[in-house]
Amino acid sequence: VQFLKKWVYPYIKYPDSAIRNGIEGRVIAEFIVGSDGKVRDVEIVRGLDDEIDAQVVKVIMASPKWKPAILRGKEVSVRVSVPVEFKLSKSGSLKIKK
Image (cartoon, rainbow, N blue to C red; front, top):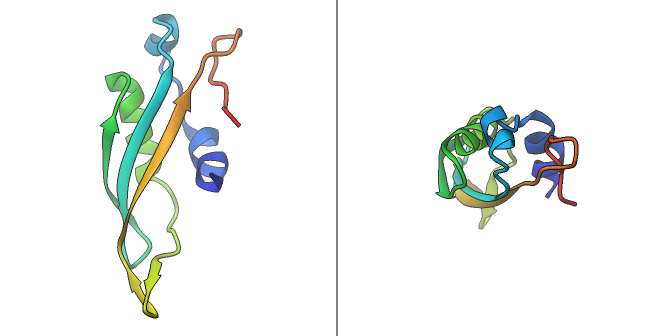
């Protein structure tokens, strides 16, 4: 949740074409956080629109390093899944779902 509030929602851009077409909903993205903390292999497992999906991938790929997962005292890679909500407000901009 902190990743969404502090990184994804502040930096994601709701594509103009998606706003014009009234596209709303949830994108589910999965990615690997490597044992070095770097994000890689971002993929959309449930998408809404090509432009929206591309924005989600772009913002997640640009995210800062994460704390790697720890298993038996050793840093390991882990697959993460996050839902990103796209909801239009009356002003036609991205509204963050809390």
